[in-house]
Image 1 (spheres, rainbow, N blue to C red):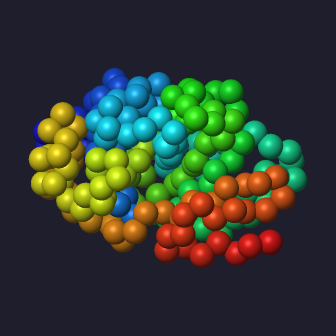
Image 2 (cartoon, rainbow, N blue to C red):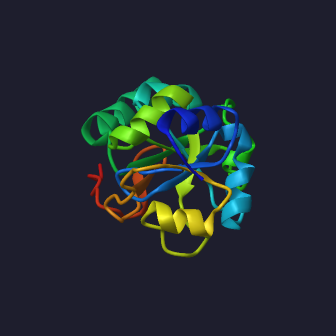
Length: 192
């Protein structure tokens, strides 16, 4: 279903499954409390966590926990690479619904996309559970038409270019002392 920006934002706020373009690949998204909708739609295994995406870093800090020194390290990376195609996997606070990462609820992937439409939606909905728009194990879909065919129940934006870089974000996990690259994308994170 193709709708306006206002309609998609209202649908997202009520817990519907939506899709929007990002700087990497199109996203499937919903409010974190409804994250099981993503797992069901994608036929995704619960051992694959979702990403918490927001319009700005400040919207995400309540969902992670660390020492003052760790926050300084994380902020330095965020200042350098966000908004952008970098997902940081950090220790999760207890405000994250377990369904975001059922296999390991102690961590959460967070990201701020470098995309005007995505940021506009996220600024009004608050942080959302997200992942790439595709069936689990399949290549990411690249446009609204493909998303509408594969996910007819998902609400998409009308008259919007969905194609991003086509490469998923780099995923870097904080180990407590350094970054472990879980997936290499377009951003090459400097190792300490």
